[in-house]
Length: 249
Image (cartoon, rainbow, N blue to C red; front, top):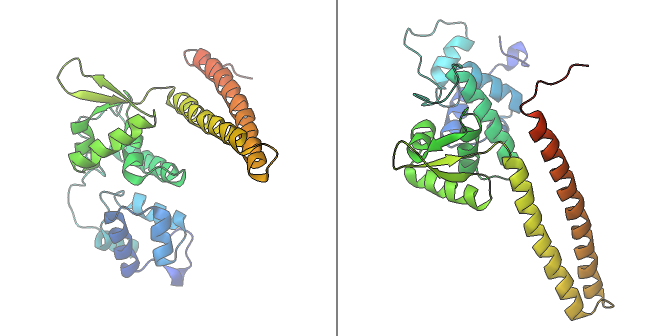
C-alpha cells in the first residue's frame, strides 16, 4: 500500500523509472518529486523502502508495489560500506541517515559532492576516512573526492591527518566542527565589516554611499560579536557535558 496516495493515484512504473533516473543524476528527493509531481516525502519513502539511493530499481520496486513477490536474489547494500566504521549498525540505516544529512546540507548551500563527503565522515563513528575509503563508499572518482576535500578544508569543516598505519592521509571531521566553522565564518565576516568601514571613511560617512557602508559595517560587527560570544559560551558548555551522563529532570 502506497503511503499518502489515494488508490487511483499510486506510483506508476514510469514514475519509478523517473525516480531511478533522478537518483542516477544525483538529484535531491525534492527535485525528483517536482519532476514527477509528487511530495518529497513520497519519494523519500519509496527509495528507502526499496533499496536506498544506491540500490533502487524501478521494475523491482513496482513489482513489490503491485503486490508481486520480488525475484529471489541476495540484496546488495545501499552503499559500499565494506569495512566501514558502522559500530555494528545496519548499513542501510547508516545510508538512510547519510542521505538525509546530504539533503539538509545541500539545502543549506553546500554543493552535492561536498555534502556527500561531509555526510560520510559524520556518519562514521571515527569521523575519519581516507580518500580511498571515500571513493569506495561513495562510488565516485578520486578526482571528485579530491575536489570536495579541498573545498571542505578551505571552509574549515574537515582536517587532514596522517594515518599512523600507512602513508595515506586521513580526512577528519572533529566533534567541534560546527564551532570551528562558525568561528571561521565570523572571521570572514569581520573582514567584510572592516572593508565596509574603510570604504565609508574614503567615501565620506555623510554621503549616502558612505553612510550605507558605515551602517553595514556596524551591523555586521554587532552580529559577529554576539555570535562569537554565544558560540564560545555554548561550545564550552557542550564540551563540558560531552563526557558526562545527562541529568534527568
